[in-house]
Length: 277
Image (cartoon, rainbow, N blue to C red; front, side, top):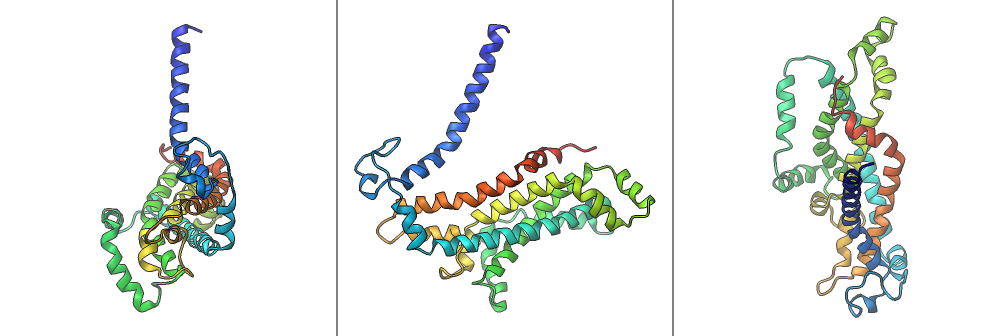
């Protein structure tokens, strides 16, 4: 191998390692602060690792705070939203990909328009709509709002996967006696597992980290989600960074487990839909 080529490969690898270190450094610092005792947070200055570590922050978050409630609420909201959006987006994406019907252009245009409005403009109208229904301080209301805002993008994402599957497969199944729905369920859906995984991952992450609507529609700790719950570690005159970072580390666990379970399909799903045929 030529020296020039070795240098190029080495430079590429060095650049990748530098990017990975840059991306992971905030997570490292999150863990570092979470295990640093309170008396060392400000007295030691900037150090790459504290001279003494503790798990008191984790113990307090798990046993003496409302974090388990926040954690449970976020799991319920994120899981329900991801499931609802994926089901709706799979059906609507298939319809947009396979059927020609009157008003299709306007439906697609309206779905695109919904993605153009700043979310902060919609907080007041949504609150006014949900309040008479008793959904302003409930997890059900959050699921409805999150589902509504994630369906358009997820639909277009799923449509790209359906566009990449030849229609001949369905036609062959229907020639053999299968109905349209049977062909969709038994032939098309298994082929779109990467797309379903990508949609699940995107929606779950979006719902898990959403703060604006969770802050405006939820009052009280009983129905608060994790992003809102982090604000409870901020008082009027101080911020308990150790406990806040410990809660952040714990909140990473379900997201990491979720992506580990679907990573086999996720990598395929993020690229397969970009190419048709």
